[in-house]
Image (tube, rainbow, N blue to C red):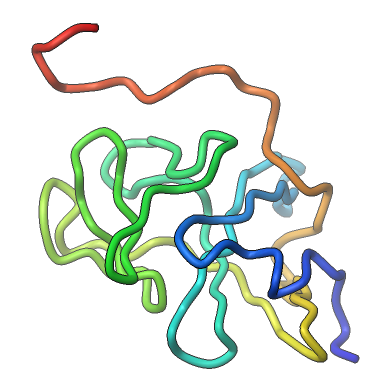
Length: 138
C-alpha cells in the first residue's frame, strides 16, 4: 500500500466528469481538487479545481465538463488535457494545471503529495457559480 491517504476508488471517478475532494496546503489553506479520468496509467489524474486563466472552478459540485479527454473551463471554454493538465487554446493557452501527486493501488486512489493533506470528499462550501463573459443573460 502506498504511503498516503485514500481518496476514492478508481471506479468512483466518472468516465466523463470528475470526483471532487478538498485538501489543505502547507499554509492551512483549503483547496478544492478533482480526480479526472485519464487514458494513461494509472487511469486517473488529480488537479487543483481551478482554471489557470481566472480562478474559475471546473467542478462546482456536479462534476467537471469534459470532452474527448479534456477538461473544459466553464467561463471561457479553454480545454485542458486531463492527463497532462496542459492547455493549448483560449485564454489559458500555454498554461498547465497545478497537479496533485497521487498513486493508485488495488483500485484505490491515494493522496501522496507532501504539499497537501486530504481533508474530505466533496468541495469547500461555496455557492458561487461560474461567472460568464457572455453578454447573454437567462
